[in-house]
Length: 376
Ligand SMILES: Cc1ncc(COP(=O)(O)O)c(C=O)c1O
Image (cartoon, rainbow, N blue to C red; front, side, top):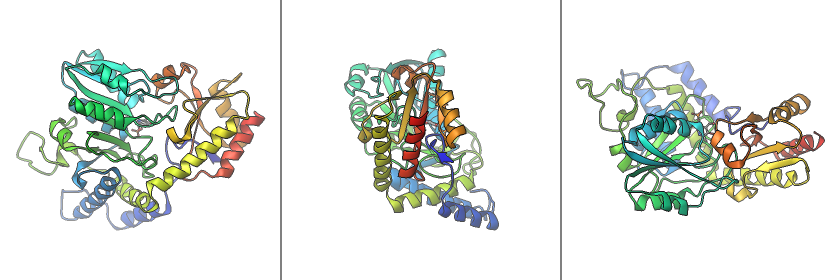
């Protein structure tokens, strides 16, 4: 088997993560904050907050909040920041994790939503952000790396412009967390991440990092018990409790602590350089395959390790199935939960076959995939 579907999820946990989880499962399984033994789970959460905070340049560990994943985080950011009558900007390559909540708010006449059109490669001209900002623009939502086209968005430029006008910025870092260096800095208000992709943790854990201004302005979207300020029917206004009601996924949090610490030891720059080189090798090999039409940017410096293809004469599903049946190559075909990105690239509604690489991918695997595609 060759796994080329890292954009969906990382296939295996690293040894360091497995050992951490094994030790936890054999020793304790208690809830954070509810009793004395729970201190251990609270300590695991603090460890994960510290590791993730360092990775994303958060102002402190309590600025890292845990959720069930990128989808929950981005919904919380959007619903927590958008107010009735607001004008909201988002790009034309958004994943449904942001596109659907935004579209629902638009349909319910809560917000006025404007999609910023990217070019067919998935690139956005930052001047479009400046041109679109109005008096009532409240929010700019951007996908950092397209899960369909791989293209990396010029978020720093766009967020700087948004900041000039006091617009809140929300970054969907599902495809970039742990594989592309990025620090919150002054311009990013909320960064949502998934634990099970580039960060190498379990599925069912993710979170967001929040800046000072957004932490104060964002309303909790899920409310419930926190084990703190229990005399009040309102959510506490301090972090992390404001955004973390209910029982925490301690196993997930622990997997994140171990995996992010490991990433920090390896260095995101090192991971990025390796994935960039693998992507470059794949893209350059595709040049020799006549009927394969790659979508998105062909510049590996501007792309995460995600490449989508249309193969002349075959449906995307056909290519995916044949590669699996003949060569044991696992890819993903279809619309990848992002109809907008496919409309932008001109591959809607048929979709593409997507190849995505990660920490376990080798050069030999890239070459085998290219040979299989050529044979097909
Ligand atoms: C760009 C992007 N955003 C958001 C998500 C949602 O992540 P999760 O399913 O972990 O909530 C994904 C997952 O595929 C994604 O690729």
